[in-house]
Image (cartoon, rainbow, N blue to C red):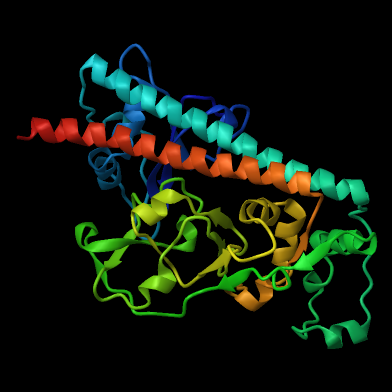
Length: 364
């Protein structure tokens, strides 16, 4: 089950054909049986080239057409083993492979910066008080009656995030809500979606696609002329997106490629913008990914079958404001994180474009 660097992982059940080129982040981890492992033999075809081909519209199309099953689609290792692969000139293969290895390194470095920024915030919290996560939390009936949600389910009052953030507040930490910091928290209303082919539309990003480094490869496209509220739906650089239905609380910091491609976001994604706020956007993005804050967000959910949060819930999130040197250091790391992710996206697109261009040249 163990995964090594330089492999290609392919989803083979349900959502088919999503590919990942593994970097050092994957080393020492284990993977589900629903991931097919492609382990290249470097003396025949270079790993980065194979990955680019399988991610291209030609290779990925062949992957998906081998699927079988009714409700849940599947592909098997032998389908991929029998997949025809074009043999490019060595020089071109090497160029594509180098690009993908650069992408893998950029993703690895960006992940390190992201983790370091979260650790800095946690260290700032620990300076104020060491929180006991096993602390019992007792809620008075009066507190429930005065709570704006009028909820009586225990996760709304007792979880790690609530206990620890309350502990920080009791010790005098500088904590203010997103609303107090004048952070804009919005989401567009429901609208009619007119789906079109890629060349006639704008990419439409759903909450389930936010976790992908490249959500544009398989997203839907909406009409440029028949889609209402384009300004409200347009995704802009430095917006923080937060999923608010189904899987709640996943975040994405929007980088330049979303604006370049004029991407639109689903109505089930909350937009958090700190451009006119008293808090820095980059710090806020890292803060929303601190584990106790992610736990706190879970306490705001409502609903049974499909859980949700609304902008007015998110506005209540308490934000820990540490010393200015921590904010500055976190902001610098997240700015680099964002730029590395953008550069990784561009280099991967360049590699895939080289594959598709070469195949199209053969077809002339």
